[in-house]
Amino acid sequence: MEKISQKISDFLGSLDSHTLDKGLLVACSGGRDSMVLLDILHKTIHGKRLGVLYVNHNLRGEDSAAEEAFVRKTIIEKYKLPLFIRIIDANEWHNCGSIENKARDIRYTFFAEILQREKYGFVATAHHMNDRIETFFLNLLRGANIQSLSSIPAVNHDIVRPMLTVTREEIDTYAHIFSVEYVEDKTNSLPLYKRNRIRNEVIPLLKTLSGNLEASFSAVFAILDTDVQFLEQEISARLENVLFHRYRNVWCIDRRKFSAEHAAVRSGIVKKICYGFNVRPGRQLTEYIANAQTVNVKKNDMLIQSKGPYLWFYPHTICYNPQFSVINGKYKRGDFAFSSESGDLEMRTISGNDEIDTPNGRKNIADILKKRGVPETVARSAKVFHCGSGQVAGYFCFGFFGVSQHFYAKQNETAHIFYLNRL
Image 1 (spheres, one colour):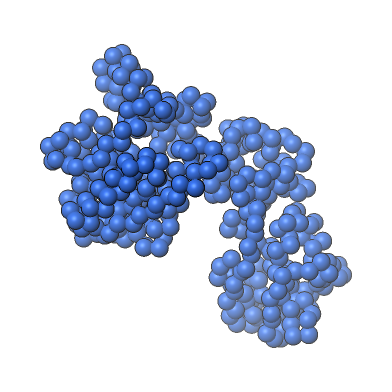
Image 2: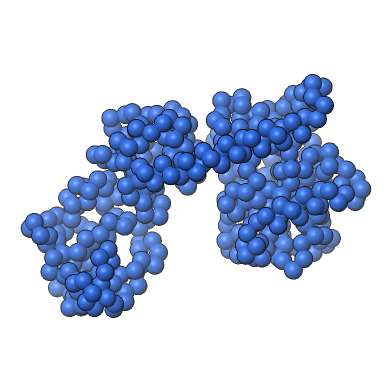
């Protein structure tokens, strides 16, 4: 069974070596696919940290408890690896809508938390070629676009899938030869979910029409991946064209430029922004954003609002507590800086009456932000800087900033320069 091990080894060799050196977390369900992946990685990865992630969904009663007991015993006693477990309380499933979507969100949130906390490089899941084929048909039934038909990406930021070129038959053979123990999920054979019906009814039928279904789809996915790669590059370039302002998770795009883009590009731009908020937008939302005179939409924890010629995407609840480092250095145009004579400045949240002196007279800061197209919800989180007497020296709002005329720093003169450490 050198072939399957070599495929996984070749895939790992294509990853960023510096990140991989931090170690690998394996998402393990206790099922055949993830136990085979774990067994191969345990044998082939040397000199790197290997850990295991497990989520007990608590949806199958005693079977869920037995699965967790198997995973604990096998990972700790046989493989002697660190095991990180998330047990989902039964109450978390109440009024959750799609159980599959909720379960996926919980898993990947848990993966991200452990990855960051334990400082591993990647999370490896056991998705394989047949999973990718099943996902293709699921997305096809939903009326998906080309990116979704490409289905499961091999690399998605810090989530990697080393077995996407491996077939279910290869996995079965490896498990048999090397006596890999695993738990069989009884629900996989029941027609409870569309994926099960595709796996157990549609795929066997297609195999009667194709000599090698996996090879045929491998060729299809290679074409789709190439097209998607080009489209993603084009969307990134077009996003830069329509982007007016971005600061961390606050985005602002030019509505006129956005509406002039091709529908496929508009859809890609909205998805690229929304995915950062864990929102999966449909084409209907994209076209509404492009064509509505006034936009005010809430999706999960994200707000989308139009403000004059701009369209803003930002968190529904903005917890804005920026922290700055202040150094004395030579002022350059574009620095957020105050004259060296300003003394120590204090920061507080803006009030409706705060003003600064500009070359065109004294102006209200809230009005300045409004004219710059900043939504009121965002502007209310702005911070102002003031001296001991209470006089306002300047303001900062998600990358927008201004300095009162009497506190200007002069070009190439020593100034108090503020550098943002974090929000």
